[in-house]
Length: 345
Image 1 (cartoon, rainbow, N blue to C red):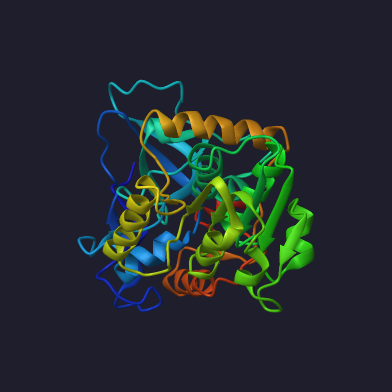
Image 2 (spheres, rainbow, N blue to C red):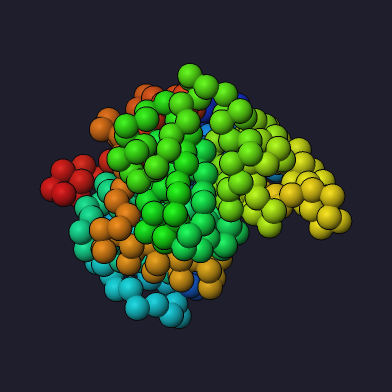
């Protein structure tokens, strides 16, 4: 096995579309494994907003390194002493977490618990689109939001990566009424939303206030839906869960806003507010990947992929970052890393 690989590397904080900040190199050392980890030969990888937010500097201490968390591929190697039912050659998908990125590369190391065999009805490209958004939808709605059958739910960003999966999860789990925001009205309704608020034609704040939702699951960020929640958009005892906060690119401000709102809630002076981040540590991640796989194999959740091709080159990587930052994609943007794999599937 060779000791170098092709991979996307962040050189410093800055614009994700600048080759002075982010580029693909072909002499990056293949990751060495620690106990509990496996090495994946990557077939495909998908982008998430967190990827470019990290490069922009949301985490001040993170200044350089490998990029990306969503991946699918085959198990190349298993670290000695690792307890797992996975075998070399298994087709897998997974999310290593934001502290151990590296999916935009020919090889990626990942905890064995963070990977699962890809659903039988998916190919590598489809599977690569799901880990981060699937975990976000499952954990955000079921665990943070405490979704139960009969709940009235609003999901902002209905055509985005997380939103498109969250609508399907909410429908499957028995939500009685699903609202979503987005300009692609028919597309979002086809995913399972009962009502769509087209933010280009009406105020999200006006449309949501007074609606008495059990859960508002915000995947976009901003202040309008939070203000609406306080004006009766959220019912008494309801839960406001956000993956994006107020769209500030500083983790300190996000935490400050969350802390203040959570304190007011605990003191009985405000409504429930949770700034949600995906848990990719055991045992949560293995259990939730299992739930995701079961939902997909039952065809209750289907990946939503943008029909645009990307490959592991600096130019293509920059184009992918730019497309993601535009917030206009319907579904997930996926890069084919290993053309030999992805072309056959």
